[in-house]
Image (tube, rainbow, N blue to C red; front, side, top):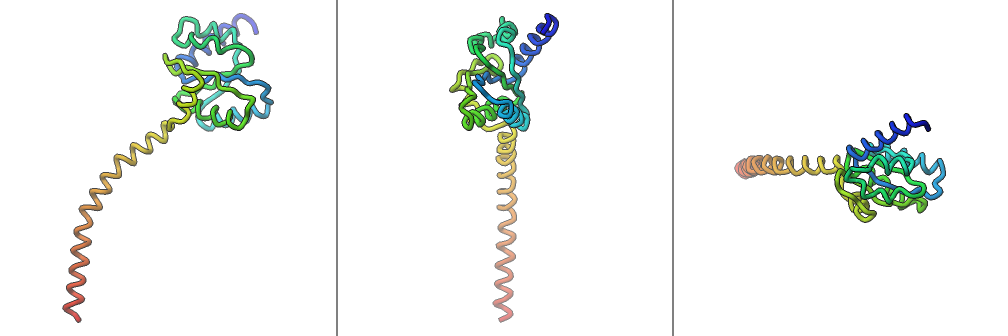
Length: 170
């Protein structure tokens, strides 16, 4: 990798930390197949993963709020990142449960520094889509309850009238 490529990589890594939630993982002996499986799971959630050179990652985050996690870039590391605050954390946590060769080290979410426990807590939160679904359900359920309440007396009256009509006919 020449100087130009290194400079581009440093800029790219810095941009990833500025615009995304980033989870730093240690990959101790993951096979290529395991890594591709993990990348596929991340891709399905809208997240991505990239192995980064530790030295370049440390340079990229120098002077940024995420500089406090520079110590995580030791040994074989990779970063998982996503615009959705929980997508990368969820996918990495799920994969780490099934594969002990992947370890969550920590991460960053904007100016917030996350340790392993914070990443796990973030992974247990609902995704953006789940939150939007619950908000829509909360908004529409009172409307359907009101419509049901308004329609209920009419159906009750119709039932009473039918019963009275049946009595008169008998």
